[in-house]
Structures are given as structure tokens and as C-alpha cells.
Image (tube, rainbow, N blue to C red; front, side, top):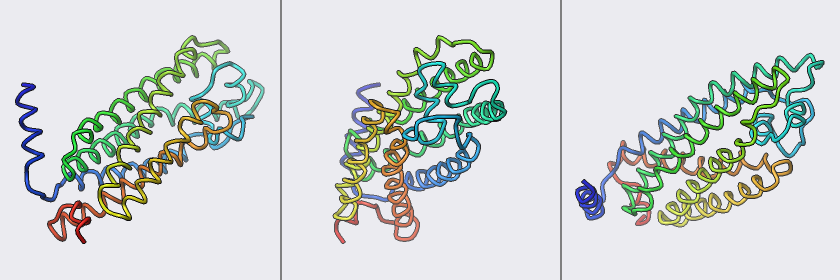
Length: 256
């Protein structure tokens, strides 16, 4: 089985350039991810009780919570009339976040496959597994957050808080690695794509800063991820147009 897969991969590397419909799949997932992500920002609580400005939205502060004091800073004390509203909005947002996981995993994985079909570079095929693994970490993270929030609602401490940093860190590192792969692939497609690809690669750096000092830099996780995702969406838009209108692969842009 492994030998047959190896032969198939090698056969793909030797095939002549051809348009790939993976760009259409990527573009569809990309638009869905963008729209649902914008919707989801309206579901999560817009503000916390007393969180450091460096966290940005309260949902990021929740992901990096490490103590009861952190949770009180996010949701407020039991005497705070907004606590129930914040708790309800956070739970609803995390429930619907599972849909977002499926969308962004599909978007990034199909984008890596589309780039692999264009460039025939083996690392791009392997990279398609990165966003899938990130989504699985995200799902585990959400499971921990539900437990933490349920315990906090009852005035208890959840042992799940001790495990929370691990899936959070792995998730963001996997998403950053995916963006680096996408950016590196873009540098192979021509001068302008190379410029945007370099920006996407450099934008991954704040992810490490955010994981080290979330209270100061967690807000940077959103624009850090957005750089690579918007680049991939642009690649998918142009790739889809070339597939439908010109019946040409995106990689032909290097010869124009």
C-alpha cells in the first residue's frame, strides 16, 4: 500500500502542468470560513469584566486562563449582573466554534493540496495534515473550556485548567506552521506572490510572542493567522478564475 502511494505521488510530480479544481474547493471553504468567522465574533462576548488589553477579545483570554482570578476577570464576580450574559455567550460561541474548526481545517488543507497540485512539492502534501491536527487540538481545547466554565459557574475549580495550555499552544503553532508553508509556496509563484508570501511567513512570528506572554500579545494571534489565510484566499480566487476562465494552472503566472 505504501509503495503504491509512493508511486502515485511520483506520478503526480511527473505529470504536465494542468489546472486543478482544488482551488475551487479552497475558495469555497475560504469564503465560508471568512463569513462564519465574522458571524462568530458577534456571538462571543464582546468585552470581559477586567482583562488585560493585550488579550484582545475575551475568548482569547479564556483560552489562556490559568486561575480562578483569570476567570473572574473574564466573566466577572457572581455579583456582576453581566456575568450570566458573558457565560452564556461564551458557551454558545464555543459550541458553534466546532463548525468553524471544520471550515478552517477544510480551507487550509484543501489550499495545501491545491498548492501541491500546482508545485508538486512533497512538503505541501504533508502540510495538509497540519490544519486537521490543529482543528483536533481546538476540539479538545473546547472540551476543556466547557468543563472549566461549568465548574466556574458552580463556584468550583476545574482540574482541566492545568491541561488547557497544551492544546492551545499546539493549535496555534500548527496554524502558524501552516501559514509558513503557504507563504513559502507563494514565493515560488512569482514576484508579487513572493512579497505577500514573505509577509505571511514573518506574520507567524507574533504567535510565539503571544504564547510566551499572552497578557501582552495574545491580540496578535488574529492578525498573525489572517496574513496567511488572506494570502491563501487570494491564491484561491486567482487560481479558481484561471481554472474556470482560462483553463490554466496558477503556476503559469511565473511565465507571464
